[in-house]
Length: 259
Picture 1: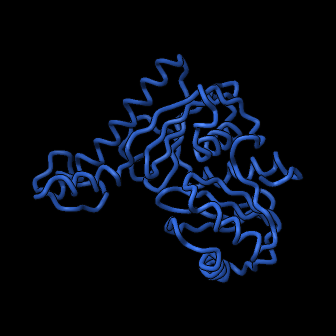
Picture 2: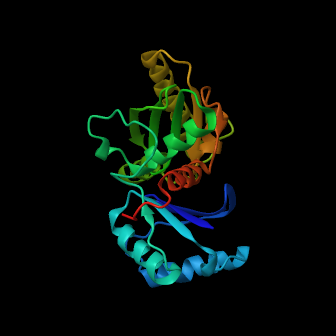
């Protein structure tokens, strides 16, 4: 079995694959100073619910945008699973040309998403990832990563509003009953929820116009289902896109020396 980790600033999404099948997946809080032993306890408990043992894991791949997490997570893999993980980063084979001024600047999560999206659809695609930041990544019809855009995430914007506006409350990130809201909570929800749907549509339409392609728009990340319901441009959603991309990249690097 393959164990895949997608380490983000807010959450770590991990999944176990048997061949190409995603056997199970979990989402845990991304904690910068969690130790290898703590990872062992948390992951062992998750595995127990699915009948998976540490000894079942034969390979591991990690995509990480939080550097302090990488060393203890790698130590966990080596000490408890007996394998050195494949790390997504410079030098790894992705099978995708990166047309960025400095390819090393592109977050591993963005490349993993792009690889998975193109592998599934084999056409021009825009990936919108609703994470700590909201990222937009454009892949050409030839399977080239051309770049994209980064905006503050929905949760970041909500917390900034709560922190800077003394009289405004913290609210649940949910779709309100109407855009012309009649109370403060719903008003904030309307601004955040429909505002981000509009942000997505605006950036996606500008990307399509600039590239001259009617690209497929694929959304992923924790809030993808909610925002997709209000967006006019999102065609499909895939909450497990990053895990699928990690499996593909691992297959392309199988047998190579770990980073």
